[in-house]
Length: 354
Ligand SMILES: CC1=C(CCC(=O)O)c2cc3nc(cc4[nH]c(cc5[nH]c(cc1n2)c(C)c5CCC(=O)O)c(CCC(=O)O)c4C)C(CCC(=O)O)=C3C
Ligand SMILES: [Fe+2]
Image 1 (cartoon, helix red, strand yellow):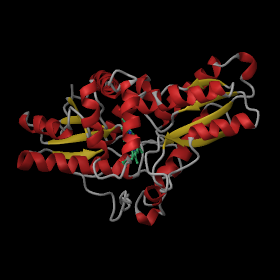
Image 2 (cartoon, protein in one colour):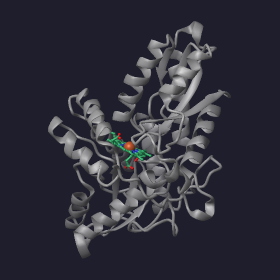
Image 3 (cartoon, protein in one colour):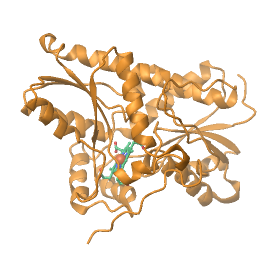
């Protein structure tokens, strides 16, 4: 085993989710603190979690990703212990960084489970790191966050194969006319406008999502598709990225489309927004409109995902070239939660509710 001279740990940093019913409300309070999410939306989201016994799949999926990454690191001869910390639920990143400090970690790489630029997908994870270091104090390790990886060829290939497999699940006679629909988490229009370093012109999140969709469709050999958005939580008077997936399924049905493949391009694993908003709500909508429905799997469980994580690590510990096949830039690699650039992914002022 070679020990990296530059880094002595890898921290997998994610969103977090409840693992028992009593944790659903406190988790949601952490997520939405100061964000102007209407209370009726919160009540609805509590119900979504309760449909799954109050357990989000996200932590277990991240533990699986970590096990696969540990195996890939070992086979690449890279000796880095892997830690797990979240923004919104246990294991909280503050506690994990404290453990790392207690174990003598001085400098760690951070793999975020979001591939994207934007406030929620990138800058907020920087804020998590800065907050965690501050809570630990002077013994806190230096933390270097890994860049946005929305167009990594290994992840694009995993999405493309998942699309092909989903198409094969549709009834054979409907495959030729099936429509491919990509979906990602909606964000406020104002947040998208601010996404990325100002000099880059904004809209980094929606541009990366559109580029990733084009790459995955091309790799699957499909030239016509749509990109839509899901899981909006803002009050109705605030514009968010549209169209919404369910409205779009209606529009497709109105045009006579009788089969869809839905690809959750915006998510690395089958967490609640996938198993509820897509496998429950969108699938019901498709059934109601008599459309055949197949959902492409997310890349987190594909072995190429862990290989990608190790490649991203090797960019730092072995001077490996940064691979990316898209045409939109990737940012997000900074030390100790610093911004990528002045004004990058600035959080727009949120309207307060009356
Ligand atoms: C861009 C983006 C990603 C992708 C990047 C990334 O992966 O980080 C993402 C991921 C996720 N979002 C998640 C859950 C939630 N997101 C919420 C609310 C919000 N998300 C937003 C954006 C995003 N979210 C935004 C702009 C809000 C409004 C409030 C705010 O400005 O912050 C809420 C509040 C209630 C509601 O849904 O309204 C919940 C519960 C889970 C965990 C699911 C599980 O438990 O399995 C995951 C992975
Ligand atoms: Fe979210």
